[in-house]
Image (cartoon, rainbow, N blue to C red; front, side):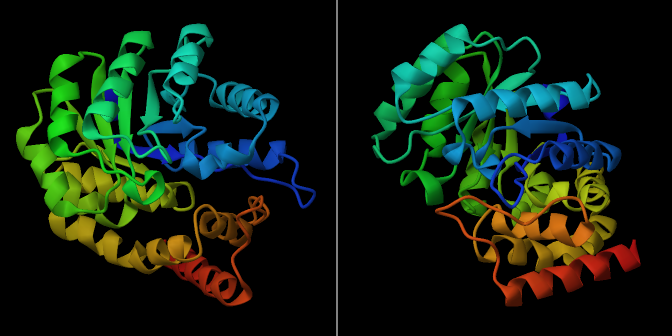
Length: 295
């Protein structure tokens, strides 16, 4: 899928200090990302804190982002969970006409076998009327989708078109890139190794930090795709300290502090997450000023 090449942004959900959704800030984040040059937007992923949002809030966020985007960029919707029947039911009943694909996380908590993971995504594939992006993030799910399972799925189901690979393991990523069928896309789910994965043959990234620094990060990925290695790594090393910082005390606490430093949104998160502490907030604030000064 051509629309998935480059930089996608896993949009955060901004909250006011009373923990209600900050609509104005959400609109600002979407426009900031689009104006910064990213290629597509991902709605209701992990970074959106979807685990602590009501169904009504989720519908509101979807509607707000669709209206704000106004057809400018492709949209991807997070549809996943650890109850296969529930995921299938949502795919069969939700209006997905505004979306280019779904992003579906591997089942968490249950810790299924590789066969269980395969059967879960088989059911997702058969229920989905639009393309499916697999999402492997073992640090959150408690189980790793092995390259052999990804290849089975990619070869068996034509609408499974890509994987967001967030194991943070370059060896595993290279196995995927080496063995993937033609047309199947490997997308980094880890901001720090997104550029190395692109240079090894990956198609791009679904990023967190790109919504804070959309111009710089999306340009880095485009340079990588065009094999302009030195120019790309110059941006990588400019942003690398910031990438470490935004994940230091959990996601999306770090990127929300970036938003606050930029004057876009409050740094509020919902329990059980907590805001970045004063030390980290100060360091992120200094980092944002440094990058903006060099921009």
